[in-house]
Figure 1: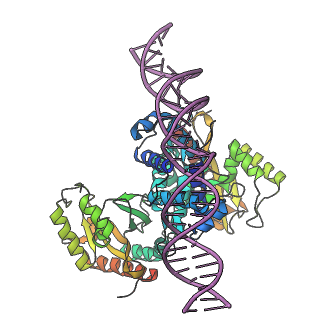
Figure 2 (figure 1 turned 90 degrees about the vertical axis):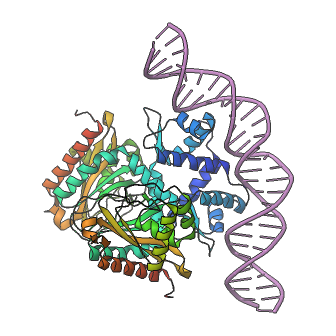
Figure 3 (figure 1 turned 90 degrees about the horizontal axis):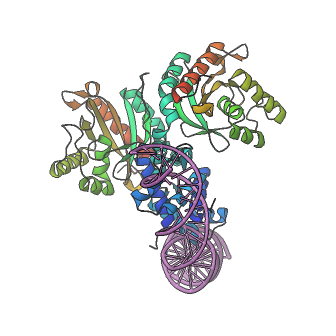
Length: 254
Length: 254
DNA sequence: CCATGACGTTCTGCATTGCCGACCGAGGAG
DNA sequence: CTCCTCGGTCGGCAATGCAGAACGTCATGG
C-alpha cells in the first residue's frame, strides 16, 4: 500500500486532538502536542477553518471543532444501513421493555452509539448518539468483543479500567466472560460501568453472518434485574430484536 | 492570507460530495465529479479511510462516510457553549409549550440544528440534530436572516424555493418580512415549509449582542395557531427562553 | 467462450506543493 | 517599560503528493 497523504493524517490528528480536549486549544498547544512547526499547524488549521471543520474564537484566537462536522456526522447516519433497518425494531423494543435502547457498532477500541431510543416516559434524558462506550464493561461492548474478531483483540489487549467494584478487569476472567457470552448469545452489564444501571445486549449479524453491531437495553438495576439477574423477559425481547434486525440485514437464518 | 492546503480542500470536497449523495459513490464517480485524476482521488480516499472518515464497502468497492465523523460531530456538541447553556431552557420550553423545541445556528446558507427536544408525549419522533433547515422559510431561518448580517446576505441572494403554496419567494416580500421580524423581535412559519406545521422562533444573542443562534418551537398548526396566528402564549414563552439563554451567554440587557 | 469495457488499485517520474524555521506585531504580566 | 508568549506571516528548499499510464479483476455481451 503506497504512502498515505501526510497533510491529511496531520489534519485528522488535529481534529482528534480538538475532539479530545474538553476546552478550546491554542495554536501553540496544538503544534507542540503534535510535534509540528507552528507554521505547518497554522496552515492546516486555516484550511480546516475555511472548510468549516474547525472554528476559531475571535477574541482568544483559540480553536475548537466546527459545525460542518456535525452536519457530516448526521449524513453518516443517513447512509448507515444498520441504523436505517434498526429504527423501527429499536422503537418496538423500547416500548415493549419500557427502557432505553442503544445500538452500537465497533469503532476505535470501543462501541460507537449510532442509535438511541429514549425510555418511553417523559423524564429528562440526553441523547447519546455519537458517544463511545468501553468494550470491556458494557453489554454492547462485551457482545461485540465476543463476536467481532477485531474488537475481540482490542478488548483483550487494551487496559480494562475498573469503573465500579464489579468491573471485570482480569484477562482470564474476561476471556471466560466472552466465552459465556458466545455460548448463550447475549451479554449483560450489572453495575460494571455505572452504579445503579444494568443492561443486556445481543449481536446483530449482517450478510454472511459477520457481526456488524449490537442492540441493547439499559435501565435502573431495580427495574431491569430480579434476584441479581437480568429479567428473562427482557433478555428474550433484546434477542428477538437482534434477530429481527439481522434478518432485515440479510443474515441467513442458519 | 497565504494559500490553503490543496489536499485538504480536496478531501473536504470529497467528504461533502459523499455527504450529499444519498447512496454510496464509486471512485470513478468521485474523481470525475470533482475533476480529479483517479490516482489522486484514490490516495485521498485511502487516507480518509485509514483515519475513519470514510468507509469502503468491501464487495462493491464503493465509498461512504465513516463513523469517525459521527464521533467528532458529537464532540463538537460537547464544546458548543450555546448548546450547553441552552439545554435546560430548551427543556423547560418544551414542557411549558408542549411542543418540540429546536435550537439552530447559521451555517452554510442554512440553519444547522444543534439541539432538539422532543415534544413531551411518547409519540414517535426522529432526532434532527445535525440536520439543516432553509433560511428563507422556517422561523429559525428567518430570525437568523433578520439578525445575522452574513445569513441576511445569504438569504437574500440564494434562490428561495417554494416548499408549499405559502412560502414567500419574492425578494421584496421577503425583505419586508425580515423588517417585521426585526421590529417585533420574533419570526413565524405557518405552513411555509411543511404542510400542517407551524413554528415560532426568537434570536439568541451572545456577548456584545451579536446574534449567535435562534430558538424555536414547532408543532401541528392546529395546536400552535389560533385564528391564523401563532398563539401569543407560545410567542411569549419562546421569547422568554431566548432572553434567558442570551443572558446566560453574557449578552448585556440593553 | 473470449473480447470488451469499466472498475478499483498500483506504479513512477516530475515539479508543484506544502513544510520548516525564522521573523513580525500585539497583548499581558511582572 | 521590558520581556515573554501568543497567533500569524514569509520565503527558500526539497520532500511530497500529483497526474497519467498500466495492471488485475470482474461483469457484460457478442
